[in-house]
Length: 298
Length: 298
Image (cartoon, rainbow over all chains, first blue to last red; front, side, top):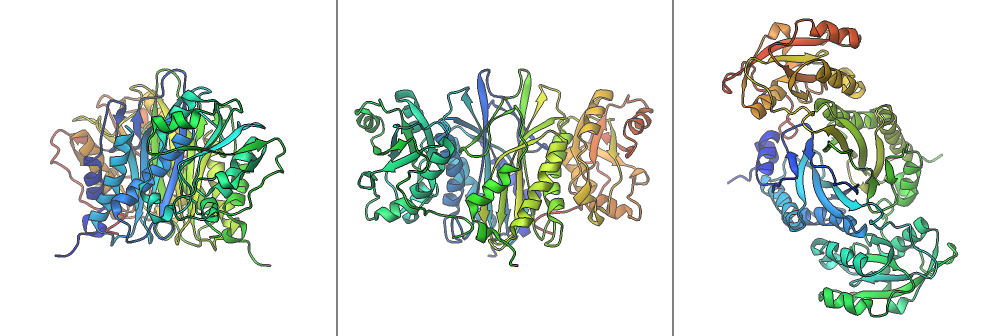
């Protein structure tokens, strides 16, 4: 039997198939079907956070990657950015570009993967857009909220702050890049239990991402390479430059109690918090070489 | 001299070039540079509106289309959706997928086109994402606000309501699809001066879009073809199915004064409001055939 494609089904029927399966809740005043989605605004005292992220076939996944994992990854990457701000993600819009010959089943798999992970974090897909194109891509745009002054920027690191990462780094291509958990609970725990001065998620590798945090904060840094937690079987070079770790990179006030990593591990048995270095006042002093993943140069 | 490409420049420098030229205002608490953008939340009594839209090279524009007009179109399409809800657009996120061999100059042109139109409507680009890919596409995700119960849905049309369109229909491919003005002022005027029961923007042609409005409202319709305002040189068929008109399609309470189109034209000398038919109670009674632009079947 011939596989049904997007060209066979048409845009309107595709949209109906997709939207019929979306989760809903009381925060959605008008979902798909109108020109815009309408949702309840953040509560008094909260600010609105916005993020968009895209994954492209042949760049972030392959034609062979199971559709549910592709969808999951698209959603997880954006959720990871909300974790990095210690914020609460709320509503998502999804843009699908796909060749007309794409099987309908594959597209439904993408949405299943997205919806399942979104549901786990009480995030709702409230709208989106579809277009044909020669290469499949999936763009997730998301809103979230955080109390004023309670979200964590990349720009707050100060001299003598301690630098930490969660989990292990390197080797994500072996599977973690498709299956990582956005560290929302971990980020909220850290903000509650420690003085987090800056935070970001590691998407392009420590060697590229730590300088970005340092740039935003106007500081330098000193990493002890031996302290960097390597994924089993990975070299230091891989840990620094492979990218797609989706771990949290954060700086904590110098008076952070030494017991914090143990407390963190008691709260989150599946992962650990590692001290890897400290922030220096001089923005020119940086002991990691350049590297990491560049989307256009790679 | 060799043209500088995205591959020559690299992602970080590209992002710096782009973000340095973005407009800013007091509503932006954290712009590009953090994991998420942070903006002020809607005011008390307002709801949050969300929309995303994408344009793809070879589908919505060609390799020869001037970059500024491509960027302008990407922004204008989303602004048009906020007009359709009689809402106020606020903040945008932009996702660019582009081949590494794309000239940097072309990408800067895209952002100039987007920023210029956004500025005209006091909309700020607060973040985005770039990735390489084989085909250029530009996705704009936008937030906006509207007072509770003051935005206009597609679902409010009732039997006997009158159906109107603004401007003229058909032939957009000759240039309008790149240069149309999002009808925000017109939409707000209509809501202020008449009882608008349902509204949408015409993106896929009246023959496809009116049935969508009717579906959402659970009604039928009767159009007088002779009343449909044709763009000069266009046939009725073209007016119904060309698509990309970006005019407003709206229904008004049956007691709308006959003078409204004249008042509208006095307020907006460049365009007109045309009565084209009326809403019927029976959702099965629809006198327009199917047609219009389908992204996957076309």
